[in-house]
Length: 112
Image (cartoon, rainbow, N blue to C red; front, side, top):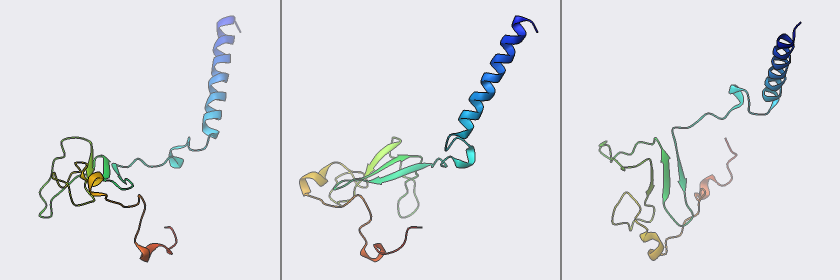
């Protein structure tokens, strides 16, 4: 085997080794990876619901509401002058709410 052949063989061994290392890492296989979501909604402590990603927003009668951006905040305090969007009024109103679930009926239920 000539020099070029030895270099090619060494490179191929290195790639096989690298592939094996990557394959062995947790979460590296497609079936182990968390599935991407279209969007997320995060309730902020004492603040709005922050919506990120492709989450459609509709009125009660089904009409689409265009938030004008990909990330937006929805009012939880009921005092916003730009409902359903948050305008920061919750701070002056002293609105308080946790980031997690607060319904006491669900506190003792096991996680799904």
